[in-house]
Length: 466
Image (cartoon, one colour):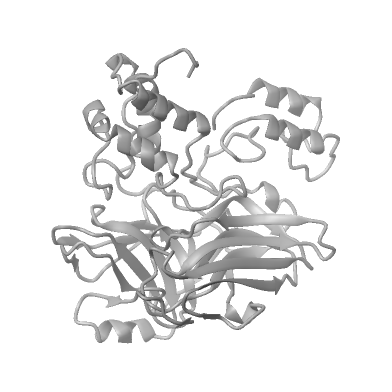
């Protein structure tokens, strides 16, 4: 937007709102109000400016200046300035001919025809009492055959109340027993699956997120007789709603050569006993040694309501190299996520993984479940706390750094820093790799070298939004 130009809804604001807001803020979705027309956006203009300027919306807790992930929902400074200028100008409508139109939101599967559909046995009734609910549903796999999986796609049955979902895996039958003891479909569990599941993060879904499809040769296995666990977070609703969510299962088309594995950092890796005294803020630092070269796929920090912030990174043995993985400066339990790196991310053997979490057990924390604050220890309940960082990974192979994990076309080849725009940062990244002749990160034209040809391609797309 030129500095002398007054922004209008159809030309300047609609593209921002339609790209970043309307995925959830449209009829039939979880957003509390639709934002699909000029009249709808006009009515909430000042509110939209406030929640975007403060970073509350769109919901994205990781710091995008620290690291990047598939499906980031972050407004640029120019987009924020456009919204503010539009409100300051009186929210002019402009020419309807300039409106780009709503995106074609996918109906049904985003991937294709599933090989298997796992469905909740019965619809779940979420009460209209304006409260959040965490309910776990047990979805039996194949009783006789291992399932080789390239993608698991959660398809919410009622997007009016479906806030997010986390998948797990149980090979012990424990979840079925918990389900049998709960009169409602599934069973209630706030922080995790209520027991030590075989996998606590087997996949997930949040509104607007693209389903991750593993590259050829990489995948997961659901053992014969195992149960897939579906933890649904249902958001507050003034009326009773029914949900019957499904999980689409896509089998691997090629043999799985590298099984996706999960490891986690927990209180046993901390530098001190995990204990949160009332009226104190405490920071805990966990470390894990990396015993072999690995390629990270995704990362999931996890704590409860007293959690305040996270930073996770890896350091070399001599501390001369640091790999930033994720920073969440303002933790929000209700917007926890399952964060997938844009490409496989190598962590070399001998490096150390660090997880630093701060907890605020004072009255300054508006999410503190106890008033007045109480001493808090590790546990499953709402008033307990946790310290976990889950890492999904495969054993490293040469060339992993160039294997993309986002949907096809999700990134530009010249967006070397994967920040959504081809900028000076990408130019500097290319120049730092200039002259490389093997395994080059900035080999844009894929000729096994970084040369003037790559530089010309980048300059030809300079300024492009990806």
